[in-house]
Picture 1 (cartoon, rainbow, N blue to C red):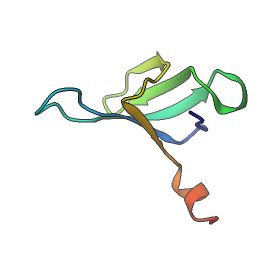
Picture 2: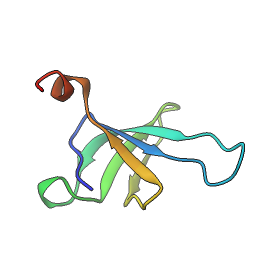
Picture 3: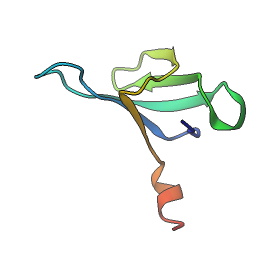
Picture 4: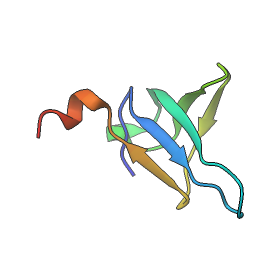
Length: 67
């Protein structure tokens, strides 16, 4: 998994009825875009995450427009 500052990290709900958690990558702490990441959630709290297989990276819109 690779991410960059400004990307969104989406952690999918693990059980029926549980919503996805979306956070913004504010710092890449690994080398070459690899985990761990410092992320900020919508309510403002921050955490350090090493995402598992239930997560995906949504690229920052600016990057998507280049293709």
